[in-house]
Image (cartoon, helix red, strand yellow):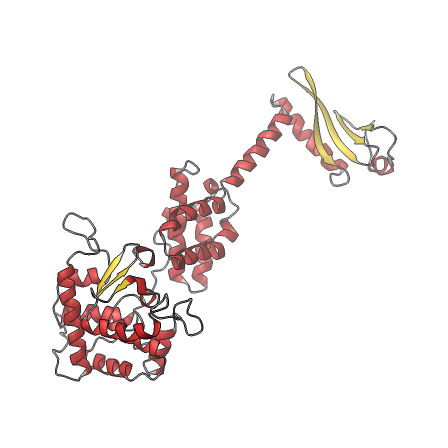
Length: 407
């Protein structure tokens, strides 16, 4: 006789476990503690076995019968339902361990060891905000190109085109990492080339007209704010390093007697140590500043604490207070200024300039130059540059910037 919902609800626990039989091997086991467990009795390979189908009322009579029928279909195909369940559970566990997020974090842990902390923070933040919520739990081998595109479209729709391209690049690296570690067979992001609009290239504001540069330098010398900030402003055009490299400079990196600043690899964008020859003018500024901050870690300590470098907005804010708008001059603008004038006006060899800008420069054999390459020439260039800036600041007649006319 088959079970009914009424009979199940009215079943009371006894002093021993009680079986309430249904049909085709299905029964409800009522325990002395009041639990009601669905069980399926079946034979496989000549042995009698039991399969748990869940508990009542979470699993209703109708659901229990459906689970029984599913198990019997497996038996009809000579499949042990118990072993099948174990295999499914194992597969789910393996798929979870091979999820996009798990592999992405593994990739990040390995790759980020050679990155600057600021860059690593940006990469993981983009993945956490833009990829993991939608792809994170998915088995990486199952992810399709349309799924990745949907993630990228969300970023694109908020106007962050460059971020969308960066996330696609990160995803591609993660998929390729999964391939070489045997957890995926292809990179679905490779099918999305051309699917995103090309980002508009943003040029950082820079003053490159010689006469305007002279005005900028005179404004810096007349700056009425913090002396530390003023020195940073004065050194920015003389060294044309990246703003982060300047503000995080430490006194242990600077040898005033040798007129050299050795920036360690961990603070450089390209993760290679960089040597900055210091002009006579730069050394003079640093000696004057050393009297104030020389006993501290940072050349340009923060305004509120000596244990941290100056704010990344300090130079920008000073430029704005001096009247230079954000579309006129930026912290990175000193690099563009030097690159343009050294090439177009002073006609210095481009590879010397690029090397001093800490860009990737290779020798004729394709090998990256070391930090001391062309050191004598670069020292001459840095002094020539400093002397030229002094002339601009004094308002002397200068060679005008060459303008190439359109053909």
